[in-house]
Length: 286
Ligand SMILES: NC(=O)c1ccc[n+]([C@@H]2O[C@H](COP(=O)([O-])OP(=O)(O)OC[C@H]3O[C@@H](n4cnc5c(N)ncnc54)[C@H](O)[C@@H]3O)[C@@H](O)[C@H]2O)c1
Image (cartoon, rainbow, N blue to C red; front, side, top):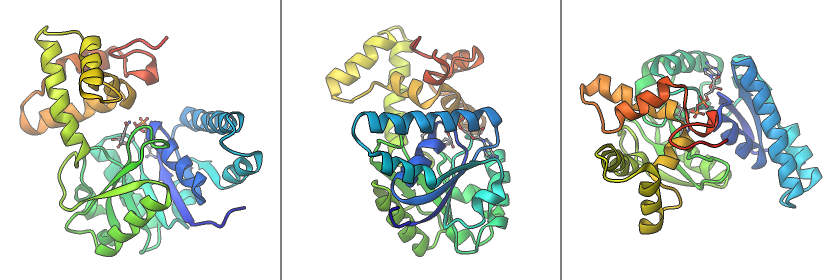
């Protein structure tokens, strides 16, 4: 078996957490995923088997490599089991401030004082949680992109509470799992990519909302006119409209201003149409 680079706990085995975790295991970390929901643990285990079998079938991995990866990939519902020996903990649970605050407080009581604690939150800066984390100098954002097994970028976000050593460790961790890290030197909601995307999405929602074009034509225009691999509505469907709704709702609650697209996304959310994961969103995926 390849030499281990360290122990990594990923909390939350949903759309992002599972890919972050498997990416780390593929890159020789010993990984435990803590997922609290029974059905999600089962779906994660099945997804991992299917993904790895696919890599063998495509000739991208050998049977031996896959056996190694499986041997260093564990799934549990027990937070303590996942975190107690970890060198790095990556939180990837739902985008909800109270849930993340509660979880990170618990994590910090379990891990060693030098364990790096990172949140993969799409928009919340890590200082949101610094008061519940012992030794907050080891707390920062490590933001992956969907699909995390494929996308090369990670954003590392330094808070005032974050030590330089933690930033160095996170940049090195990012490189060690095959990513290119960029440093966001000051905390800012949404970091770099999501702020740029926010500007594009607001225009995309406005243009469709004002009846200027359809969702399909907007995506086609952005893909063929700007050379983006995916239009903004397809990105929303891939990332999850539940996540998008939570972000827009939080912004509305904080500012009292409804972003363009709020009503459109709220309607889909209330109908249970979360995008690709539920097979319905802006597009249908049956
Ligand atoms: N989806 C994206 O494209 C994307 C991209 C970058 C970052 N993120 C961020 O990643 C995080 C996760 O997003 P997602 O899309 O994977 O969400 P998801 O809903 O698919 O997965 C979240 C998982 O966390 C589990 N969970 C909830 N509370 C838990 C707890 N206390 N302990 C253990 N497991 C728990 C849920 O059962 C669920 O399986 C969010 O903060 C989101 O903002 C998402």
